[in-house]
Amino acid sequence: MTANIQLDPSKLQLVADLEIEMMSDMYNRMTAACQKKCIPTKYREADLSKGESVCLDRCVAKYLDIHERIGKKLTTLSMQDEELMKKMQEQQSAAQTHAK
Image 1 (cartoon, rainbow, N blue to C red):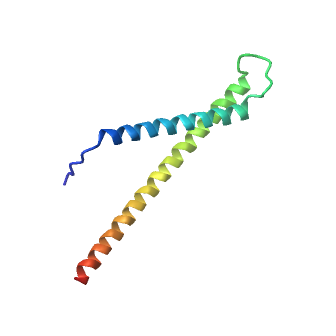
Image 2 (cartoon, rainbow, N blue to C red):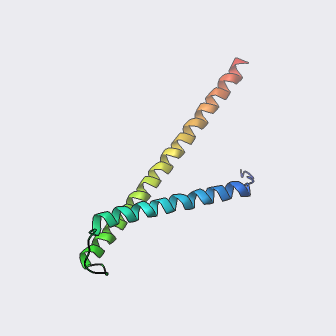
Image 3 (cartoon, rainbow, N blue to C red):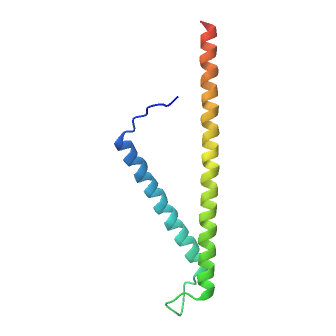
């Protein structure tokens, strides 16, 4: 059984805008956190040292890995919540049917 769902273009645009805002926020947080951790406030050279570069690579990789893990966990929890709400609605509907 396939449901025909009409997606409102304004809602799609809102979702896209929110996603861009969230990704921009994540990028800014990651940049600030990794820069604070890996690059000293007083540096002597314009180019990154090998140690700074390696630190930044690892920091960004960890940040993105954790971001992905959290996203998957939140998706799982959201799906579980949806299933629970659906079951509760079915139980309420069944109870109302039996009460009549």
